[in-house]
Length: 203
Length: 92
Ligand SMILES: [Zn+2]
Image (cartoon, rainbow over all chains, first blue to last red; front, side, top):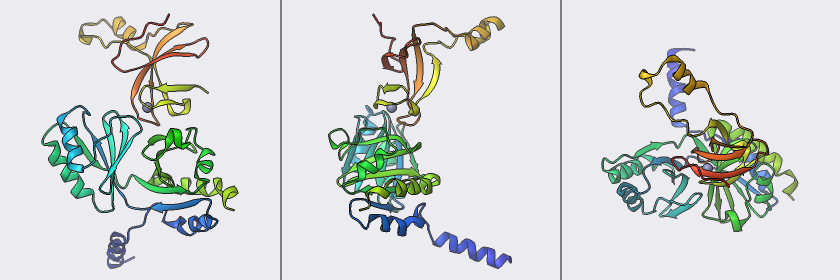
């Protein structure tokens, strides 16, 4: 390979982004055709890991700057203005926003922290988001998740870090199902597992 | 399989946790002042009771926090869980 062709392929790589589960789009669509289950990927969402003392003025200012308070109750998601904030731990949150928002959101949080002891890390590339929705979504996840996902326990506005098919995930309950935030390097495994677990519900 | 109640997340499958050994083992105030034997005792010697044992667990696949639990080593029953920094509860 010549130096020119190497440079050319690097440039192409930089322009074309490819999401971790991109190769599964057609199989997700086919599995969703029956209507009882819907599988899809939402690629490239902005994910910021934020750590701060929940009782500090900085935590309050960050909530105000985002327009969404940082939830202090375990397993709770707060939402507003196109952002969600997921409780990950007593001093740790995941701010989820649209593609491309990382820089602006990071600056907004840093400004709100105003020098206090706060950490903000762009972890957008760490995980991708798989949608498991439809009336049989809970049945599919129950094949590999020990949590009680019934809406009375885990309805919209709830999140949990747990194991799905022995893989670490962040589960988020949404209106018509779940978002499964899975590490990029596990996305293909999770996609294969979801496709397999959903076979009997495809109708 | 144990069902362990994380003090933050609630009851979760044992597979989500890592075990951390005996709880409340205080780091020596002045390690340099210890004899080799005293240092080895701090590093390597742990209680091994048949019965109630306060031990550390980490919710590794969940909130990733360390916490303490009082478990009966004979029955595996967990009598109490409490957050790091909280005193060991009295079990009657
Ligand atoms: Zn936990």
